[in-house]
Length: 117
Image (tube, rainbow, N blue to C red; front, side, top):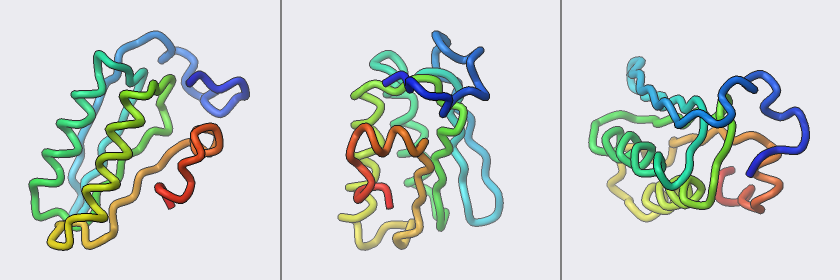
């Protein structure tokens, strides 16, 4: 989904570039930052980064998509499945504190506001 507004105006140089995924731990939190595009060719990388964080004793995982230039259905599926795993796993290291930061327009376009609240 490419926003038609300026919701990603801060990162136009990332359009057309495969995702760069960075993971950083700070105390009891892991932040997974995505730059560029998540599509079929890079969705598995995002999934692996999230699952690696899930396998730790971390209390909170933040998936920061503020520099995301493009997200297709395979990327959205990764995020939805991570959210479902978090809600279904009562022994989750997240203890319900996982936060996925999504651009407001993406939430509106996909109707996923209730899932990513």
